[in-house]
Length: 187
Image 1 (tube, rainbow, N blue to C red):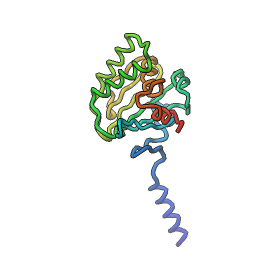
Image 2 (image 1 turned 60 degrees about the vertical axis):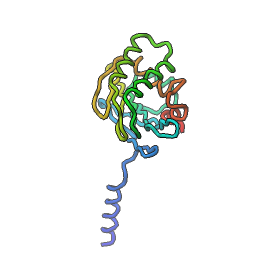
Image 3 (image 1 turned 90 degrees about the horizontal axis):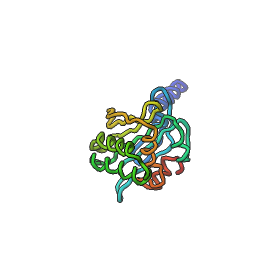
Image 4 (image 1 turned 180 degrees about the vertical axis):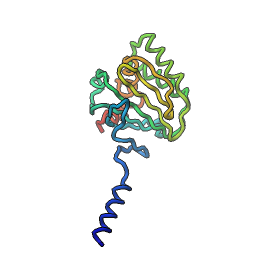
């Protein structure tokens, strides 16, 4: 009887244990995500702060772990950047941040790349606490932008995806070096 009781308790504990994942602040992201049949692993997480306020927690998903920004950008492989917002941020601020990130990390951007970043800005909406923004790159398809889980559009070109990701892992990451180290899995 006691043996059955212990087994039932262990079974219930296994069912009630939280799913694995990484946590930063109040945000937990899964260890893996699947996009178009490809399983991607959480490379790392970073917290975007402004002044003293947490703005969003982000996670970078890759097919295999890498702490090397140049190698990540060189690979023509699926990747996902997901942001979980912790406070309201206006669409205009988000769009402006993309353009600032492009200017800081891809200063030689041609007119086509700048136009695609302008298109990205048009897709932005005000995001509230608990809402998400995802940028999903799949080779041969481009970068799918999801706001609150809804597809807003697909922007073509690996050069676009690289410039977008460089906003976080480039030489002048908008959210800062600590954020960059986090999503590169270096802290």
